[in-house]
Amino acid sequence: MAIPTTIRLRSADAHEPAHRFDYRGRHRYIVTLPARGRSTPFQDGAAVLRVRDALRDSSIQHKFEVYAYCFLPSRLVMLVRGKEDSSDMKRFLTGFRQVSGQPAGQEGGHRLWSRKFLERVLRKSEENRDVARMIFDLPAKEGLARPGEVYPHMGSFVIMKERRGRDPSARRDRFGASRRKGSR
Image (cartoon, rainbow, N blue to C red; front, top):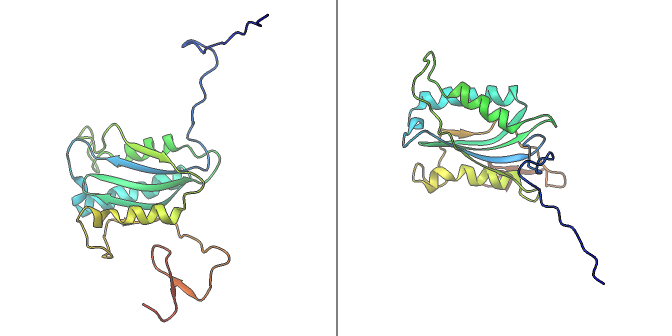
């Protein structure tokens, strides 16, 4: 005799919400914030400095570390990580976009940011250095700088610590690649 089984499907009005990622905690993200429309606001160095300062202030206020950022003419790409269990990526991005979205002293002007943005939660196996290197290589890939050339609109608000077990006599370049002392 067959035993009947009941399968309960979650209805749209179920009291239990479906499990979703809540974006709180010590997670790491790659975030791409495109400018509104087809604008290229980050060709202007003064605009980059203003938005970079807002990014730094918002990251401190919302308890986020910015491991890497790169302002390309039409977007900002960054690697960020929550510093505390209460760090909320959605609040961080909302606050940053509001503060940086209006030109200084101007109300009701054009919005800087597109409504939509891209984000990806990094896996535990993905290294910060590798992701930061990928972000720092973007200007060369887009023809804004030559490979190895310093691009003025990128950086980090975090000093990446040395890993244990590495040769202490080796120097590191800005991407963390090892070089022996005295070599170039």
